[in-house]
Length: 103
Image (cartoon, rainbow, N blue to C red):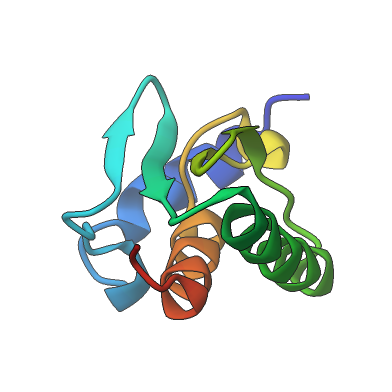
């Protein structure tokens, strides 16, 4: 269900909230925050996904993702706000960045 108030809050907060400042590693397109991750092998990629799963569950904000061998693709948006990028997405992106160790 689309919530106009949440949508306008997301837009108005964009310029003032530090969580909403763009992270150059994440690209915002199609109302989603997107990033690709690469690891040495499948085990490292899966371990990363497990860490992200625990963080996402604790935040009650779950990503769309895909994994093939050593690559993980993540897309974030907030369903409750009408499938747009909000502070929740930027907070989760920052948390994900903290557990990522490049290959």
